[in-house]
Amino acid sequence: MSGLPFDSGEYFASVGVGTPSTTALLVIDTGSDLIWLQCKPCRRCHRQMSLLYDPKGSSTYRQIPCSSPRCFPRQGCDGSTGACGYTMVYGDGSGSRGNLATDRLVFSNDTSVDSIVIGCGHDNEELFDSSAGVLGVGRGAGSLATQVAPTYGRYFAYCLGDRTSVARSSGSYLAFGRTPEPLCTAFTPLLSNPRRPNLYYVNVAGFSVGGKRVTGGFSSCSLSLDPATGRGGLVVDSGTSISRLPRDAYAALRDAFDARAAAAGMRRLARGMSVFDACYELRGASVPAVTLHFAGGADVALPPGNYFIPEQGGKYHCLALEATDDGLSVLGNVLQQGFRVVFDVEKERVGFAPNGC
Image (cartoon, rainbow, N blue to C red):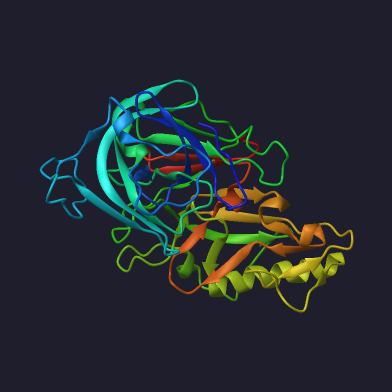
């Protein structure tokens, strides 16, 4: 599968659905479990780059009845047809409603998998520009990762190409099945949150800026998952663009970066831009280095383009992080650019390898 980033800030996979197959561009989302796409007849649909999928045109399409064990989770039943219904609502208020079915999926290397549960979305609102739907690869029963596990194992990896590169889509991929890992892969334990069991959690031990560990100003507890409360930890989420940290940890990292940036000769703007509060005029200065320290001794040095992004055509640059107070911290796709990110559920670990695309 190849990831295709558009201006929406998401990464897309090109997937053939049905027999004969209809190509659908689906948002790659490790933070959700359902594979769904807009379907005919469509009561409410957004604009999409690919053709609208028509289940009547697929010889392998099978509607799932409410009585089927594959009706998960049961969210309504069509009284006239007995079809298993679904409703998906995302954090930004977007969502999809329709019926569950099975069909054949075909990937870019011409491999195919049969009888995959998908959502046929007939009522979709405020969704991602250009996409036909979402390719959920979370930890739940309905995700593609779980459904293909009997064939490929509980293991997959992806690399999200540099969104600023002209050839940004060419090196991106999403692959299932265990392969030899680069020696430079840094692994950290994969954690389970009983309150959000479908998400991929890791613990962050801290940060370094300019080669110096950031100390003080935040509690390490806010970066570690507490299974009892469901708070803390960091969710690895390909469907979110900008990374979010607990407010105290964000402030400590930002202030350390700000001090290094000032020493290097950058000028911080009096006001932030877009959703960012720390924006700068470079003035030819070098960008302070940032390293994430994950639990288990996994140290991941980030390329500057992953955390320091251009605004206003490159006239200014901003620290691409946000503060959050809701207890859910996220490693978004901007910070993940260029890394081979490995989800080894079988061995309960997540890995990061640089220059992975």
